[in-house]
Amino acid sequence: MEKRFKRDISSLQNIFAFIEQFVSSHDIASSIAYPVQLAIEELFTNILKYQSDGKSDVVVALEKSDTKLVIQLLDFDSEPFDLTESEDVNTHEYIQQKQPGGLGIHLVKQMVDSIDYQYNNRTTTITLTKHLEK
Image 1 (tube, helix red, strand yellow):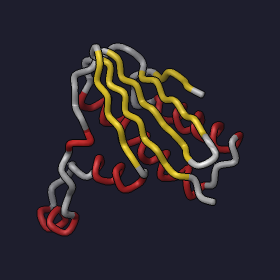
Image 2 (image 1 turned 135 degrees about the vertical axis):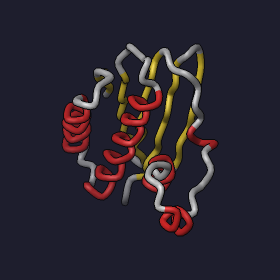
Image 3 (image 1 turned 120 degrees about the vertical axis):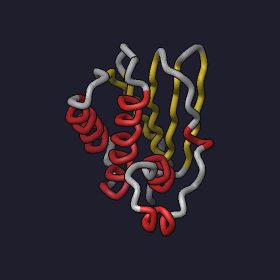
């Protein structure tokens, strides 16, 4: 199931509704749904912040198998930024520095089981995988 969302912060409500509809129709536990929602929120807001010149909608796609939930975000006409290459954050040092920002990608990495990044022909595809509980 996939849906296009306007490149605007107000789209978050529609994204949350889309995720909720998918989660409830596929009987996905809230312990899985909540971190997925947070990860999508973080990545979507990063797209808005760092790819602000983009004019196209952002696609969010969700797919469930027996063992995992696969989430994709597609950003068209974007500049490359491979979030999988971002360095891990030492949260203890980070807290001591008291500087805002910089934790989002670190948190996304903690909330999902794997992240894949592809960039081709000015299109960014971020694929998140979350293993389902038994």
